[in-house]
Image (cartoon, rainbow, N blue to C red):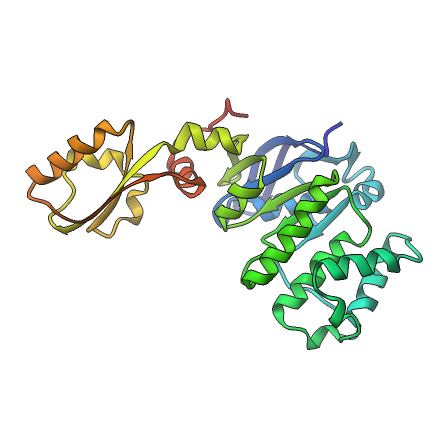
Length: 308
């Protein structure tokens, strides 16, 4: 049985087709990344998964429980950390977590609440009112709320957006521990270095469709390869080399990132640039990372799967 099973999910908001038949599974114990640009449909998909929205077509199940027909057991198996800072200003941190426990019928849950707070560095703020906390501390409480009923599946929707380095390190240390203990983690993030280091497998959404679905290591091997970064002191990139650009839309005229099929391409590219009257300010050969893969996939025409 998969941790999450998504089958042909479609969702339309008036003239916008937010999801166009999304299908994939997340296996138990995976650390799974759900990536895509703003407007790709990630939050819509998570909203349907969490029961905050209804799919027009298709279905989602959490640990075999349909999120519509068997919603109570599906909700119990799921913990979601939302993007937005949502909190009740009339409760302390501990009261907030006790109340969240009560939603799931959990009594005498203080030992686990204390452990969650300790792992998220919230112990000193346990009796502080929620409205007195900084934005970073409020986000820690949101994470604690998602974990308070010990869900086997944890969804993190941009959990480190706008937070400090300390919180990121604290959060990932704790979440990685939970993953090692068997919890399934689904992460959406714009910090692609986080996804590259943490996620076993990644799905990429573009305009409501899955355009890549594969193990992180395979995506890096298949798409990344080697790249040549050049910054011109003068001159422009020859037209015959423009097809090699990784992200043409990001070019500022003087610097370019070009795909290499092998190191032998470097000499040929530099010779072509010199023949076109270019002089160089900086030259660097790089190994591509997940950000480079992301740009290639988002600019590509078809779904990448060997991949899906």
